[in-house]
Image (cartoon, rainbow, N blue to C red):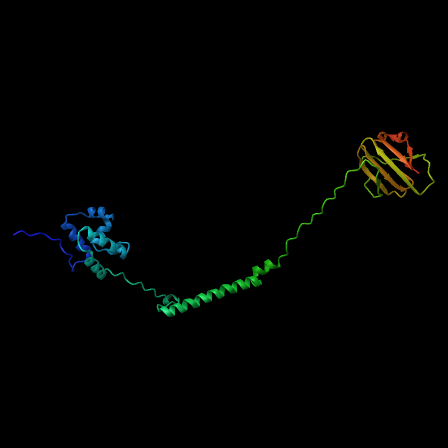
Length: 277
């Protein structure tokens, strides 16, 4: 009498892992063969057969392993999955935070109300902080608001003096520092035609070479004290008598009250000193 061997059905009393291990042994497959075909690690297959499900990533992962393992062994995976659901039920996580003083509860509606209340409270606190900050109630905000604003640096715009024209120009009677390079000495009296002592005198100077000139009126007020470039002309009007110190006197042409004055008699070491009445 010939009998045909049929695949063994999974035992309902054995766990899914042990059932798969028994079926694998009947088909003469090693754990390494199963791991290679299912693309799992050897240790994962060993944990599944030993029903050490806590060593595997999770319930969904375990169900996938059982299903694939059963199909590899040509057996119906559903009884094994049902047995897995019966035996392998992950423990429920009980998050009771009442011992830590956090007023969370597991009731759905009540928990939602508490959560909304805390959210509104947090928004109120944030809004209060922002208001206090803008109002300057915080000490650091007061310090910042009371700090004087930075002073803008005031910079006077430099006045650019235009270059002296070659035409005649009158020099105003403004005080200036006396020449430091020329020593004071009694000035010679120039014999010039004049309308008598007192009154105004008009001096016109033409410079063929750069020359320093200092002119003072009868009260000792400095009317001119400056370096004059070559080719320039100057006109000075002041109260007589007028005292003059002219550097490079040989290169300066002087006209007093529209009459030329010869500076050669008054030049000593290139400096002419004279008084015009």
